[in-house]
Every structure is written in structure tokens, then in C-alpha cells.
Image (cartoon, rainbow, N blue to C red; front, side):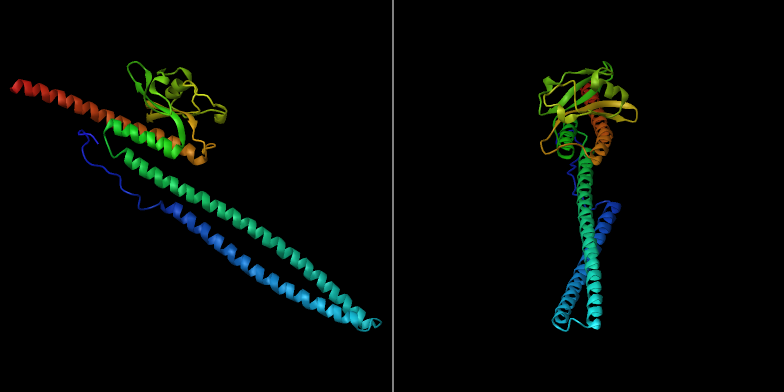
Length: 291
């Protein structure tokens, strides 16, 4: 933290997860628990069914050793066989229901994992946003933006470019995975990066995994940093980390949030730095006059 930072703004840990997300997690847990209870009852029914089948088979064996010529024995044996077939059908249906419940439990478990992942991402986003707006030091803001893009987005090579409103050029101020000199300035409205800055909308390459070689003019993702309709800069992402195979729905939401949050933080930090510099100049001039 530098001297021109107004106060110590060490980020505080997150103490709460959004209420609606927690309710989702509790609902999924309740459903999974009910599924487990139903599975237990199903196993008990299946055990009883097997016992009944064993009894009938034993009776069938006893009847088979008795008199085979009587009509009563034949009729009773026929009834027992029909009951046995009926119980076998019932057993097959129960096994099918058991398999369906198992599949449903797996689906609920996967959904619960997805919700847990979303909870973690939301918590990380909250912490990152707090850190981003906890300082007015320009270099510190840029460093935090770099960490957010690496940790939350999973980018390996990317650049942060800011707009010079006088020249209408997007110049690189920070990079990760590549050198600053390897990402030349872009004219607003020209090329992928320039058009992204001019239009003010996110750009995504059709097949990001196909781009293996670094090309500063062809990012796989471009995110405009803007406050309402005012463009502050552009974040250009050229490749992702190996464990990051693609983008999820949450990633696309993060890109939109990232553009707005980073623009506000950068604009505030630049404004503060300029005001501090002007104040220092004025104070120096006053000191010269009063000596």
C-alpha cells in the first residue's frame, strides 16, 4: 500500500452466503435425504419379497413330493405358480423403481455439487469485489484485477488495456503470461479488440480451444471495461489454464460483472491519482509563494 492510499483497507472474510443460494442447497439436501429413505424402505420390501418367494418355493417342493394324481393338488399347485409369477413381476417392478431412484439420487447429488460450486464462486466474487473497491491506489487496483482474472476466470494469458480518450487508442498497461511489449496498442473501432471497445459488448471466439498460438490481435475473449456507455478499457484473454476446458454459464455472468466492476475501480483510482497529483502541484506552488 502506498502513501497516497487514504486508509488501510485489508479485506474482511466473507461471513455469509446469499440466502437464496443457501435455501437451494437445503432443498436439494432434503430431496436427497428423502430419496435415501425411500431406497431403504425399498430394500426392506425387497427382502420381505424374497422371503415370501422362498416360502412358496418350499411349499411347491413339498407338494411335488406328495400325491400327484389328485385334482386338488394340481389346482393348488397352479395357484401357487401364478402367485409366484405375480411376485416375480412385482419384484422386477420394484427393482426398476429402485434403479430409477438411484439415478435420481445421482442427479440430485450432481446438482448439489453444482450449487456448492456456485456458492464458492459467489463467495470468491464477493471477496474479489470488496478487495477491488477497497483501495484507490491505481497499481493496487490493477494487481487485484490480474488476480481476479486468474483465479475466477481461469485465464492463463491476457492483457489489460486502457483507453486514451484523446488519441482513441487502447494501450496495454498490464499483462499475464505475455510481455506488455508483445500486445501493441489498438485503435478504437479497428480489429477485434478495437471493435469490442467501440461497441461495448463482450466478444467470444467461436472455437477458443482451436487457438494454440498467441496472436495479440485475436483474443478468445474480449471484455469491455465500461461505466454505462463510457469505455474505460478492454480486457483481452488469449488462453485459459489447462484445467479450464471451457466457459460455464456462471463464467459469462462473471465476464459482464467483471467489465463493470473493474471499470469503476480503475476510473476511481485514476481520478484519485490525478487529484492527488494536482493537489501536490498546487501545494508546491503555494509553498514557493509563501517562502
